[in-house]
Image (cartoon, protein in one colour):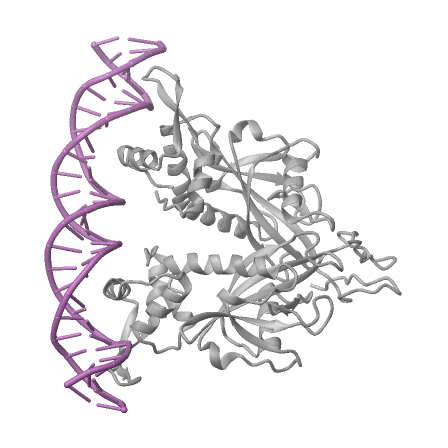
Length: 240
Length: 240
DNA sequence: CCAAAAGTGTTCAGGCTACACCCATGT
DNA sequence: ACATGGGTGTAGCCTGAACACTTTTGG
């Protein structure tokens, strides 16, 4: 690979007058759909990897923060707003883009109700949810980024209450358990799960139930974000 | 702040013909000295913040990886080689450098025997170890980076055996306990600590003792890195 | 009345915490 | 002999894991 250099115009005074890497953000968007953990992918419209699937992302503008760039790309490429977003890792292999040096700051996002959120607007490209267990071949090093994100999500879920970010504001305990089972990939004991999660005192039971089919209706809860913030100050010990 | 733009020379074909952020790495180097956790700081030789203390770091070259840049800067600015190094976070606030847009990938490093490693060679600048509890005002957003690194180190120490990275290859259990106490900032029970750390079966007792003063000599151990790698594959559960 | 998911307690084992004294050495 | 840190075991408590049946609804 022979990187094209970006040089200063004559007379300009830079703090660093050398070729610069390009800076991008890439987002691993997780969502739950039909009890399965899915990831949002975009079909590339341009070379390289034209027609292949890739993580949503793009170049960071010089006047926006990294997180702002990530949110902008999510909105532009998938119509997503107000998602849970967290920086994951920065990928800087020299040849991760064959055209020139591109360093990418990866984020991962959690969205509520994956099914309705898939909206490949703005751009003509296709956007689609894939089960994380069955993603197609991805462009660049995006498979590595996805693997990193999944590992991080699994770790995070165990000791921080992010599971709620994958559910609507009102949810049942069974739904929450399904989130954990889908992400961690293991079945959990119903009684132990309820005991533990209720023991945190972070779930507020609502005066509503959810009837879904011919069986007993389920109690709805909401997550008490305020209380969680308070507890976090004093060092919450949370583990599933 | 009015960022100077880096523009393409006429005729060049870029994948991204916009102003680019500069990319740097900054390293938070932790070391233990006299039972205290210390950070390595560099005195800046240039504006801005000339004469102030800052984290070692510098620009990423277009043909080197991020980690390679971090290692190069550590060697150039502090004469450090073969340290434990891990990516921390990427800081991208728009105004974190007043001259122009600079995005910095922060790393943290752990070095054995802080006292001997302080070697401000190569450059004329001063390099010095400061107790983390008493750092001088730092340049840029380096105080924020340091705070992030400390929080990460404390978290990491609890569930991954990185404490050894702050000690020489042969060490006593008391030394290891002091590492934990210094980093976490809390006293630990001697018997419980030894029980737990020995229970991991990752410490190999050597046929040597360390005599240090007028008291009973202490058993020396080494960390079994190979065994740890094997256990890590199968999902180690480690917590102090 | 049948199917399907919701909801509920107890027992047991293992790990964590708290705690006090003797040991080996140098001065 | 004494000062200094090295080294050791136990008992109570708490937490996590395993485990089966009743309840409520719709069809």
